[in-house]
Length: 413
Ligand SMILES: *Cc1c(COP(=O)(O)O)cnc(C)c1O
Image (cartoon, rainbow, N blue to C red):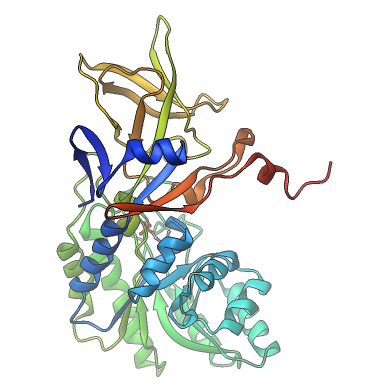
């Protein structure tokens, strides 16, 4: 469900035609819909209404302050993977007490920062990290609440670059090691075992591996409690997939069933870390056609957004629908929509059937709200795009386009 649809022949975000944004803000620009963002969060919250829970939005999916603020105002917590993301959450008035800190490589500086801010829990991913956290906490005369992230060894059946629950994955620790580490933590004065954590991967379109993984983790949660650990939080990660083209991810109701069934009778606060499902279909990347070119082999439409702006197609072989903002009449033709970056992988879409394109026409790359702007870079010395947040009939530029001066800011020749 999203609020991007044609109005009188022009693709609009809510009530704002994308042509207006392109004219006033320029291109390439990310455009987000407030109504869609709020709806997605609300639907998730409703689905878990009967269970004590906290949705910790995975900041890495889209860390724009305006989006963090929308979610913070509606009660969400946050899942962070760096000190930088914590700075962003705090700047958006998110509460540290609703923050969980994930990731395999937290530095001691990041741990100290998060500890001083009073986050809810550190999701610890290795024995050495656990010892480092204890050391940092004792140095600061504090006690760090932690959850071990366990690797449930299930195949989330997603792209290999975004599966994290396989045996070969760098994430989490094996079950047996987790139990040993909880026991060890009893002797470490800087630590307090608060919960247990897992996350099996991203763009998960099948509820079965979710239920299977949570079943295993719930069992471990019960045995740890049996050993006297007063765990209060069970974090089941994020990963619910979205429809980019013809994927059929579980509905939120189906997902809730897969999560809640294995947790029946477990008296704990359920923590979830949704990222993509909240923001993915709430954003598009608006881009303009620069040139067309035909070679004996292919037809190209060259646009002003490239892989530095949206890297998912190049990085994950991801598919994004690409649609004309104002469709022209005429026969559709198959074209490769490519960016200006000097890489053969700078292709936003292969073999797309598009109506005739002219120089200056606008295209919208759909479902670009997640892992779009947050992965954008300055590759080829290209300034990163602007971001716009639409709300009904009006919009705000929530991040101005980077300038050429911005590109030089931190450098000394
Ligand atoms: C990336 C990530 C998420 C969010 O994943 P989505 O697929 O965007 O929902 C949640 N938790 C952890 C630990 C992650 O690394």
